[in-house]
Amino acid sequence: MLDINFIRENRELVKQAMLHKGEKNNEVVDLVIEKDEEWRGVVTRVDRLRAESNKKAKQIGQLMGQGKKEEAQKLIRETGDSKETVKELEEKMSVLAIERDQLLYQIPNVPDESVPVGYTEEDNEIYLSWGEPAEEEWHQPHWEIAEEKKWIDFERGAKVTGAGFPFYIGAMARLQRALINFFLNEAVEEGYQEIQAPYFVNEDSARGTGQIPDKEDMMYTIPRDGFFAIPTAEVPVTNFHRDEILSMNDLPIYYTAYTPCWRREAGSYGKDVRGLNRLHQFDKVELVKFVHPEQSDAELETLREYAESLLKKLKLPYRTLLMCTGDMGFTQTKKYDLEVWSPGQKRWLEVSSCSNFGSFQARRMQLRFKNEKGKTEMIHTLNGSGLALPRVVAAIVETCQTEAGDVIVPEVLRPFMGVDKI
RNA sequence: GGAGAGAUGGCUGAGUGGUCGAAAGCGCUCCCCUGCUAAGGGAGUAUACCCUUAACGGGGUAUCGAGGGUUCGAAUCCCUCUCUCUCCGCCA
Image 1 (cartoon, protein in one colour):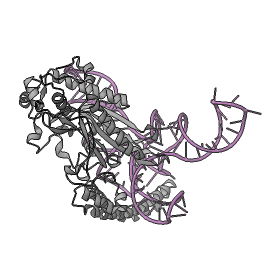
Image 2 (cartoon, helix red, strand yellow):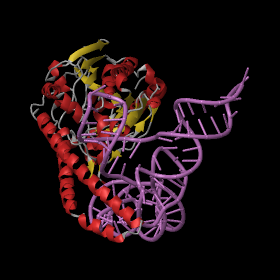
Image 3 (spheres, chains in turn purple, yellow):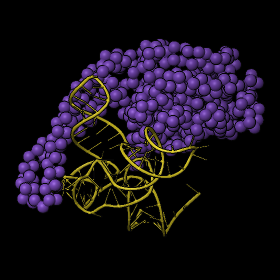
Image 4 (cartoon, chains in turn brown, purple):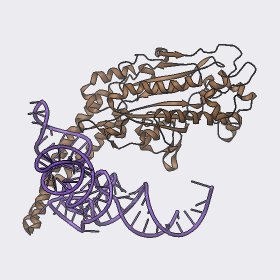
């Protein structure tokens, strides 16, 4: 969420930002400022009343200590009338705070100045392209190749669990394991600390990274225990430092984690969901950064460059999009999407999304650090995929297939695969 | 799953109804002393919010695992929950 004081001082900027992100109901900005003013008024009254009764209680304590029981009794009789008022006001105060926060949660992060203003994916900017997308007609979509080679079993996955939960078999299972190892090794080499995270999180964590309240439907729930199956490692890893105050010397912190990801993907059907394009369970290696606010712009660029380097090493043609204001999501200030070329489908597939969240997530999580002046300040968080597996697998299978039908294993994966072709 | 013990500031640890936001020690920061890494002396050292100030600052409120209750007054008493530890059971 945004800082209420920032909103107060930048009312028009925040309203404008909401319009740019495609949120038409920007009068919530005015409402939250009104609500905050009301809340502050009540806080002031409560604080004053409590100060009075604290003072009296202290006097009574002193009198009791000196043995002046009768004088104390007299004072005790005088109290009590303000007690009711305090109680009423306290209730009002907490109701107002909740109402204010609910409004606050509806206000998205403000996009960075460098982000193009736009409302559909047409408005995203092609930031750069790498490699020559294969155009030959004989390239098959990966689901055909996988079926011929018996590499992926969607039917049995559907029988055992449901649609979108495939089995990977033999060389395909091995390829996934190879990619996980390759991605983790590269990340560690780059200076990210490898961590293994829980696959379920509680409600506070889901709120910390912003899945709740705005993207609640994306997650699978375990209601009996109040858990959510993680939709991305971003959730447990970013929440790792929730409610902490870090020292400036700790920064920057880089983490990488491999986890499966579960997404309900409610309401998405059609040709986009064929094969590995969109699954309910998939594997991903995630990258998370905690950085000094002044560094986050530069850190986003190095994050993007690192993610791109993985595609280069796999020799998969890709392009990088700078997402426009309307297409980049609620919590981000700036976001790049990396899309790999799928020669069998003749389309681009998103395999990574690198985002800067500024202090938006940190404020929800109360994740702070002591700055140069010894003051506590919100940290900036960033994350990116490095990378999401299924579409990379699809791209490898389609791109590296020869006309004869073999799939040539990318060189960097051969140490993990043990073979040159599958 | 059953039984018991516990949760206090960066850490260790005192505190069982009143002047406790909290002793003491350690750590850390600054200053003093000392002619050289040591030792000693002094001061400071949580977080959030409100009011006030141009600012430095000042005043106030809340927080001793979380939430609720009793009381003029709660770290301290009562209730609920969470977590940690020990023992038993079960188990990859």
